[in-house]
Image 1 (cartoon, protein in one colour):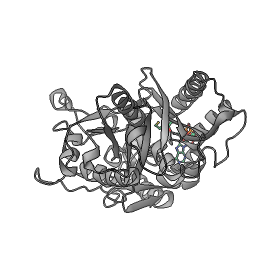
Image 2 (tube, rainbow, N blue to C red):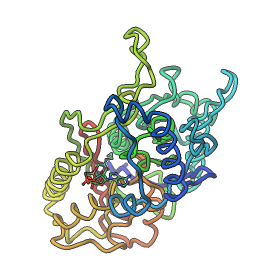
Image 3 (cartoon, rainbow, N blue to C red):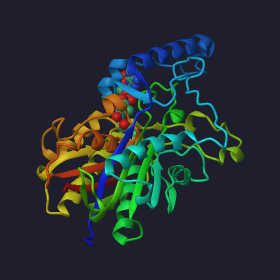
Length: 374
Ligand SMILES: CC(C)(COP(=O)(O)OP(=O)(O)OC[C@H]1O[C@@H](n2cnc3c(N)ncnc32)[C@H](O)[C@@H]1OP(=O)(O)O)[C@@H](O)C(=O)NCCC(=O)NCCS
């Protein structure tokens, strides 16, 4: 048996609903107008800050986002609610995130030519999990009839790459024969749709990948994982304070600081150079340069970040073929962005072509995998 670890299949599941910038901005602006009218006296006295208006043009120019998928559209555009309506399921029913995960997992298994019997580890890794325990991964494992073990991981935008790293290590070490890495990114409940600066950023989606030994891989598109690289550096610039301790803190568990918030400019300035340096160092480890990489499956948070990073790496802007952008349709889907890019843009690569998957985001956290098509 060789020691080669491969990605042998990926899956992508979109929720059925999508929301365009125009729809989102119309609802936000109507909400802001109502808020300003209802609080006119306090705004006049300076006790309350008026809500600024949003614009679809700004969103597209500043982020590249045109629309986003939403697990449940109902409620998001209701100016008296401004959050999705997701009815609570009973403990006997499959949870929402497990269902999303299973939808993507089935597609990844099919692409990898695998069944539940070929998998012995399930990792559900994403930016948020809807409960603490039992692990979503174990729920998914049970529903798919997989023997072995499963666990959840939370690493914000790097949850998918960091989980693939763990899968790579388990296959290399011989402690697993087939690992299903799943990223059910249900971000919409954490979006502050009342905040002009962040209401447009996120979308919902689920992605999955199968990682196994090259010797057992039988699918058409198999990628050797040549190596992995990760780095984290503590930063408060992207943060969510939602958590179980709020109950004991006697604070509003759904207050604005409990939802996604960021210092977007600082994130941009600090993360872009970190990511470019990280990727260069990763390639140097293999005596490769950016020119040797055929495809960049980069994290999908903001088109300007991707443009800047690829300019630093290549000395010019990457073409859409070299570094595909999916955030125009999907928005920022937390850790799933680079996996969506891979899922939609890998079949044309030829044997021997190098590709690089890289996430960057909250933590800060950066995770990459250098792969080569078999
Ligand atoms: C979030 C982000 C797109 C905002 O873009 P930006 O150019 O930094 O925007 P700013 O917040 O500084 O605002 C620029 C101007 O547009 C205005 N503006 C901000 N949001 C707006 C909106 N939705 N509609 C209209 N105008 C808006 C601001 O008021 C500001 O006006 P001013 O210059 O008169 O003060 C950008 O900072 C970014 O991409 N950051 C990277 C971080 C990221 O994507 N993180 C996601 C998690 S990984």
